[in-house]
Image 1 (cartoon, rainbow, N blue to C red):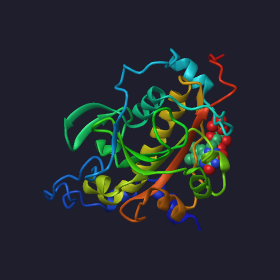
Image 2 (tube, protein in one colour; image 1 turned 60 degrees about the vertical axis):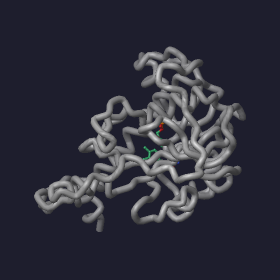
Image 3 (cartoon, rainbow, N blue to C red; image 1 turned 30 degrees about the horizontal axis):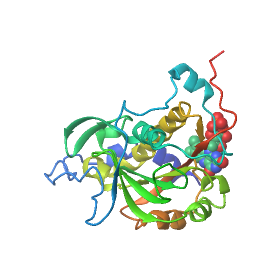
Image 4 (cartoon, rainbow, N blue to C red; image 1 turned 90 degrees about the horizontal axis):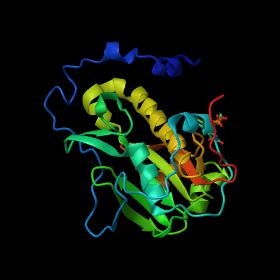
Length: 255
Ligand SMILES: Cc1cc2nc3c(=O)[nH]c(=O)nc-3n(C[C@H](O)[C@H](O)[C@H](O)COP(=O)(O)O)c2cc1C
């Protein structure tokens, strides 16, 4: 009964794909690496990599030892420097080949980066509460709508209240065509694998800002898509992660 789903986890689809017929192979122009900012939308610059203040000097060993899922957050805000650091950790551009080919802080199959990062801001210094999208090529946030989204996000996470009642909820969608352009039917498993790297970087980065997160894979697809105004076909939510300051933050070392 699980045959189809198990097959999805294998690389069997590769045998079915004629790579000479993908959009890339037939000369179709590559899709944009980020969604466009629409005229009139407000854009907020983030603190550039290396300029952020208040990031603890946590070693990689300590970050790995301390990483765990947190579901209880303090009422404190994140600073804009902390949010900038976290966002850079999940999708920051570390090298640019062209406007349609960038290297990020996370790996991606074929360097296609078929994910978009939305941030439902609940408590971040200098930012109004509301929905923002990260523009990796510009290291900026674009404001999509103002408002208190805590209840909507928690409902989208099937009533997991901590998913909305935190400082900021990261919501990742995929724009699958970015991967399909190169890989056709082989795309979908690797998009899911890519999302795992992104969230793990968030877990590790949280260790340097006295914060915690929890991967959210259980959510209502339609409610989650509605949170970010995704059409559910050409773009849809695949993962979420609330972030907030945590009480029990102690820098640990591996035993
Ligand atoms: C793909 C994925 C989906 C998850 N979905 C949820 C979720 O919806 N709700 C939740 O409370 N935890 C969720 N978790 C967190 C796991 O429950 C957690 O990682 C696991 O219990 C191990 O705990 P640890 O992360 O502290 O090591 C998810 C984790 C992963 C990797």
